[in-house]
Length: 492
Image 1 (tube, one colour):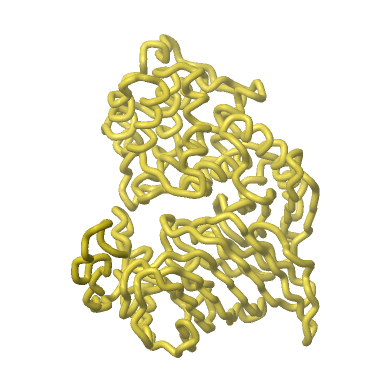
Image 2: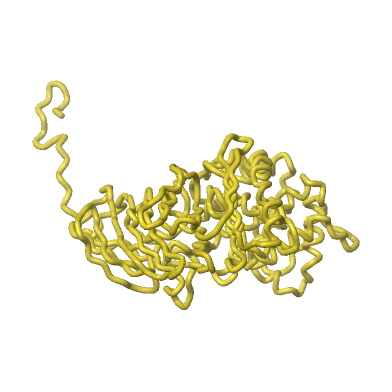
């Protein structure tokens, strides 16, 4: 670069001075979440996890190598990963790195060379352990069952099978590959890039790929004896459903529910916007497995309790609504859990309307009447429930009531524009309640502060809008039994 025409160039003009070298510093050991401040880590952003495992159902021993592809967001001298199993080695960009344990679940990696902001990181961690015996503060998120295991939990599950930056604000894609004895099935997220591959020693390697970014806790493993059913959805996507062979007399009810997944997603796409992932399906877990259901990305996992009284499509509606509300659009902070559970619960009310089993208004009336004014239920704030109550009844039921009050305040035309606008604006990202309120106000042209404050952030039983008041005890909607049966296990 030279000076302007006719002018002599000033000495050094156009050559920016080389900045003084910054001193690399440690990445933070947590992201400062309101409820779980030590979850996640600072200093880098993950783009992809390549998880390659070997699992022995007879002993629950897991060994593996996870390759983490990331970008440094600061000059780093060291960084943390969230992980609980025993680590054998760590390499960073091909160089052997130091590592040590700190805190309950922190693996501290000391880089062999300074890492500069913007630099690509390839972190290779080799490890082994028995996840069901690996406790973090007295707890394991890994469920060992008679024929295998389940890695399914919220808000944390990765600690017991792959090292990660474990917070929803750092989303990534996954490749998951697991070697097991032949005859054992492995189910995970997304699609199968190749058929199960025979290996030496009477083993088989199962591979799964998720090409859409997701939060770490939404990756899962279901290992054991499963019957697998495949199909094609109305939108052309692959559908894969898996049923534990231990379900016995509950198996027909599980199939009658989960096999409606493609139908449910087709309907939900018309309400919430285009389905955000590359595959569909569900997993009916074993009788000795989990006691809840989880919206694991592209393929929810259901505990056996949901089928004890017969089929239940309401839990299928709930978990698949999460594919939009919780999975594609994830919380920016766990205090915003209402954006997940309130919306998935209200999806059940909308499905009830669709099926002619009770309107959302009838469900509001009956739910409201179901909790007396002096119930502790009304003391939990859905918009800020506290770390101990992120899965409390109020987050689900009062959360759904809050959305119905919003619907009444803005009218159906605006309400059913707000929902797909939210999922479109924050697709594959994160959101807060404040951002959702701002969107609702922008679309509706209404000041909605009173609605949000009253129903999400004020203790005590609120007074419904005049249009929602009933003078007599409301009748029980037909859908109530199915919704209540689902929520007795979901509200955990």
